[in-house]
Length: 371
Length: 213
Image (cartoon, rainbow over all chains, first blue to last red; front, side, top):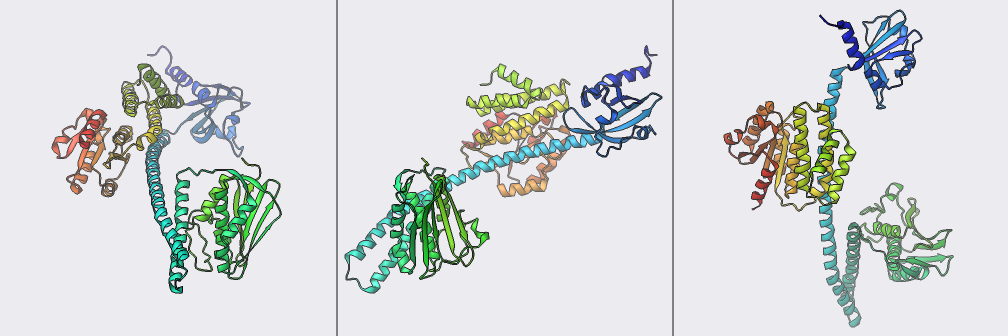
C-alpha cells in the first residue's frame, strides 16, 4: 500500500531526476512541460518552443502527427545539447486528446562502447606522447653529439691541412727550377687541398648552423668592391676553363650594413658553381641592381640548366641537382644551404630561375637600410 | 615541497575535473624547481590513491575517477622533457600492464621512476599481446621487465604472460606490482625464481639504487 499511487511516484521520479527526456507538447506543437533532465540536456529555455526546434531535422520532415501514430514505435532522433554537441535519443510519441507526450532515452550499450573507446584512445594517446617525448629528447641528444663530432673533426682537420697548403705553396714558389712533372704533381696536391679545405669550411659552417648559433657580424661594407674582389679571386678558375665573367651594375657606392666575409662567401659560392656548370668558352653574367627596397645580385651561367622539379631542393642540405659539372668538379651539396642561411640572416632572399638547356640564374637580395 | 594547502587545492580541482587549475598548480611547482620525485609521489600518486579510495567508498563516480586519471596522465607529460633529459646509465627496463586492463597510470609512473633514476623505461601500456612483448624484449634486451596488475581477477593472465616470457628468457629478472596485490597473489614472487614483488615506488627506487652500486 502506497500513500501516493505508484503511477504518481514514477511520474515524479521521471519529472525530477530520471535520465529520460520528458516533453509535453500541445496541439499547436509547442512544448508546455518538460522534466529536469530535459532542461539540463536541451536547455532552460525549451518551454513554448516549437517541438521541431529542439530536434536536428536536416530534411524538415518531422511530422508530429506521423510520429505519434504508433506509440510503440521508437524513432532515432538527434537533439542539440547544452554542451554544443548533438546527442542521439530514441523517442516514443504518445498522442493524447489535447497533448502529445514525448519520451526519449539513450542507447546505453552504445554509450558504454563509446566510453570504452574513448578511454582506450586516451591511454594510447598518452603512451604515444610519452614515446614521442622520449624519442625527441634522444634525437636531440644524438644531434648535439653529431654536431659536436662534426665540429671537432672539421676543426682538427683544418689546421694540419692549412699547414700542408702553406708548405706546398712554399715548394712551388721557392723552387722555380722544378721540372714540369714535379710541378704538375705539386699543383695537384694544392688543388686537392683547396677542395678539401672548402669541404671542411662547409662542415664547420653546418655544425655551427645546426647548433642553432650562426653569428652574423655586420659592418658597413662597399658591396661593389666586395663583388669585384670575389670575381678576381675566381679569375684563375674561370680562365682555366676559358669562361668569361661579365659584370654589370647600375649602382655605385652601395654601402650596406652586412657581414662582408659571409656575403662574399655566398657570392663566390654562386660564381664558383656557375664556372663549374659552364661549358668551356661560354659566358657568366653577374649583375647588381637596385629596386625600391633591395639590392639584387644575380649570377647567370650558360650551362645545362636545372629541371623545375629539382629547383626546390637545391637550397636544402645535400640537395644537389642531377646536372653534372662540366669539368667533373666535386661538391658537398652544402654550399647553397649555407648561402640560404647567410642570406636569411640578413633578412634577404635567395632563389633560382632556370630552364633545361638555358643555363641557371641564381639571385639573392639584401634589404637596404637593414641594421 | 608540496604543502598540505597545495595538495588539498590540487585534489579539490582534480576531483572537480578542473584540468586548467591542476595544470597551473603543477606548472607553478615546476617553476619553483620542485623535486620531480616529490611531485610524482606526493602529488600524483597520493592524489590518485585518494581518488581510488573515494571511488571505493562511493564518494565519487566512475566518470569522476576517469576524469581525474585523464587529468593526471596529461599533467605527467608536462614533466617529460625534464625526466627524459636526465643523464642515462644505459640500463633498460620494459614496463607493461596485463592485457585487457584499463588502469595504466600506476605502471606509467613506474616507467617514469626508471627514467628519473637514469634508466630507459619503455612503457608498453595495456593490451600488448604476449608475442609483441616477447619481440620487444628481443629488440631492447632489457635488464628488467615489470608487470603491473590492477585487477586481481586478471592474475591468471599475469601468470600466463610471466611463464611465456620466462620460457624464452629464463634468466631475465621480473618485477611484479600493482593495486591488485592488495587482494592476494604476492606469493608469486616465491613461486618463480628471478621474480620480485614490489609494492611501492620508494621500494622500487631503492632497488634501482642498489642496481647502480
